[in-house]
Length: 240
Image 1 (tube, rainbow, N blue to C red):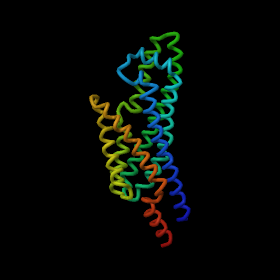
Image 2 (image 1 turned 90 degrees about the horizontal axis):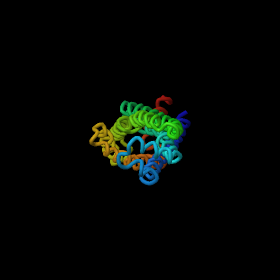
Image 3 (image 1 turned 180 degrees about the vertical axis):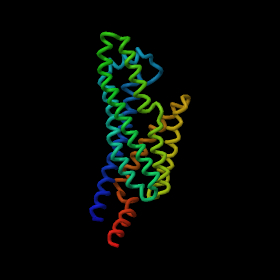
Image 4 (image 1 turned 90 degrees about the vertical axis):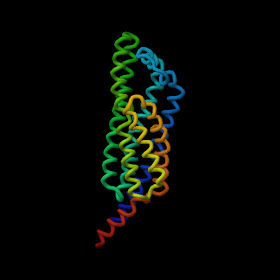
């Protein structure tokens, strides 16, 4: 039984590690598209009419961007969060459990936001050709809702990273520099609740690349670094 459990934990860590690397990759691709293909849309302060016109001209690119940065990211976030939970829970079960709940909430919000944006974009583009004013009104509502769910304020994701990082400091088995990186990232993400500091959230996004990639590599190379104590304890209890 203990051997089967150990194999399961190792497999989860490796799956979570791959998920972490994929998550880092989605952020890289998203930021790359943000700074190149979508620069006319993402820079400055375009009017609603300009945003809808850009969406109509670049529907495919925006669809792919939403799919990668929101939907794919939210999918791989779940196995990564489960692997991180398994890794940290022996040393800090309450913090780790609470953090994981926020991770699942975040994944749900991001997936819902991505689906709303991609479903609505087709309707908006169709309306743009027949009734531009209605298209603009629909876009204004959809963008407001989706932005609130997916990152206008980086609260849910930041709380997850913060709690997981605090749990990592207590649990051990994880580089302290990685935990401190998470705390700094979370602080910048939480700062986005202040409108004047919204741009500080970019630090959170950039930090996610390093954070996910670092944890992903750690999970693949050292799959039982933090989970071994719980497995040993379970095995001892069974034998006793």
